Image (cartoon, rainbow, N blue to C red; front, side, top):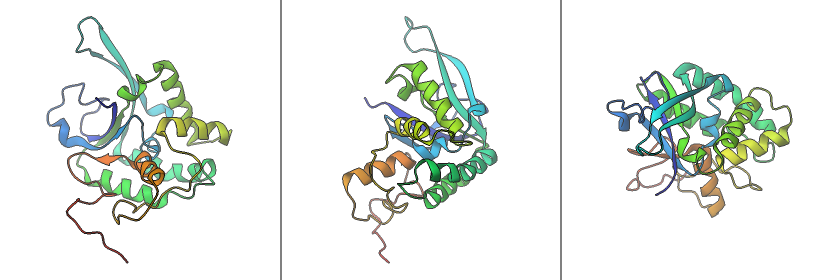
Length: 214
């Protein structure tokens, strides 16, 4: 079974809506990713948005599970996404700008009815040492306001998003237009934005829909 992260847009004012038993939670998931937390999801948050909560485990022998995750009101999350772009441009200067990618994520978040944006990273945190993961998460989010050491910021964010280094960022419309690209570019596109869950996200297209070539 794959370890997944989830991007929620929800009226639930706490982290991990699925853990909290929120009704209709499946309809509040905008996107998911496998074994990573996409870079532009992270860009919507800062260290002050991190909340730790405890939930009962499905395993009676395990006891309660503590999860740390970011949550922000939707307007603040989108404003922070925009504000992060200059920092990301400095940190990932060799890879290129992310404005078009961010615009597609913004469209997806804005189209959802929920008042809060949150990411559940728990299944990713447990792939490594949890304390190390959360320390990296805090450092990565802090770098979005002030990169400080761009090399360290790059390591933190690359590790969280599991980006494959050494390539320019793929076009924002890579999936929408089914552009020819190397496997690493397809991989990195997912690590920037994730993938739709209940249907295509704004950066994707339905498999039955023909690509539009300009």
